[in-house]
Image 1: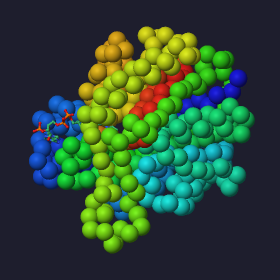
Image 2: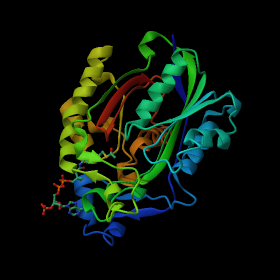
Image 3: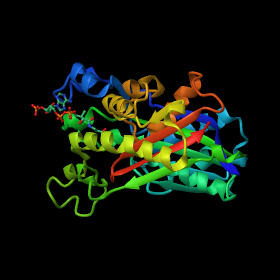
Amino acid sequence: MITGKIVGLGSYLPPKIMTNDDLAQIVETNDEWITERTGIKRRHVADGIEDKSSTMACKAAKAAVEDAGIDPTEIDLIVVASTTPDLVFPELSVCVQGAVGASENCACFDVNSACPGFIAAYNTAQGFIESGNSKCALVIGAECLTNYVDWEDRGTCILFGDGAGCAVLKATEVDASEKNSFIMRSSLSRGTCLHCENMKQPKRFEEEGFLKSTNMFMAGRDVFRFVVTEIPQLVEDLSNKYGFDINDVDHFVFHQANLRIIEATAKKLQIPLEKFPLTIADTGNISSASIPVLLTQMKKEGQLKKGDKIVMSSFGGGLTWGANYFVF
Ligand code: ACO
């Protein structure tokens, strides 16, 4: 059977770094509180001029194409996940098409599934590949959440950072045990704990305080409780549905939202924390970019070997949550 194998990875993080001490100049907080509650020490922040979701997506894609060593004209599909596109159109995926030099025979579209956006984009690309409609795809997560957070809300603004990551998938003949397997779930009724209106709303100049209401709202404790209940359950459901043993998994590549969430998930699944690679201290939560940025770091550090069994999982606004099992 055919599946998309990851043959290249790349990421881009903007050069400006905001430390916890920098944040303490903006809101009443401190390094000790942030480190203890989240594991975050610093995050990269886009300047909104050189670095926006579109430009960061292009830079990550170029790095991944170079890593894969492919001819850009081979690329026949580009899917970008972003909750924070700086452009409504052209789509970020079309910006990437131009930047990497892909041909006009390349299908391009964007998806939004909040933090699990990379998982949604990855599975969509896999569907194109498995059905024979694509042979070489770029799957990207690109985010500029710092543009949307409420910088007066110390419970939220400390969590987020900006960046982008990209995986190159190539159609590869594999046996059934190496097929991409996934479960994706969502719940509007449980989503009131996390929402963010779009910046461009009608009547925004007429109603006082309207722009303020567009900032992100998060009831952190509710999100935390949801994640530490649903994500371990999802991973168990995935292993039961597709018949793999979670103890045989080499890497749990999880959305980097909070170190405590990852620790609680590892504990519930009874998996050693060492199997959960981390970027959280240096990136904060970069939403849909967090998994491809983490995969890129793992590859650079020599942690990824052909044949490694991987579970990736993410959760976020919607609420939406999902998990994949695949063989690298
Ligand atoms: N610095 C200092 N004190 C703070 C800060 C801060 N940055 N933020 C909150 N506090 C205070 C609160 O005011 C509160 O004070 P009080 O007890 O005097 O009222 C106290 O600390 C505890 O606040 P909580 O919000 O209950 O703190 P909690 O332990 O829950 O940690 C956190 C907050 C880190 C946000 C946590 O709930 C969390 O990580 N939740 C999950 C968030 C998440 O992962 N979101 C991912 C999805 S995001 C997406 O998809 C876009």
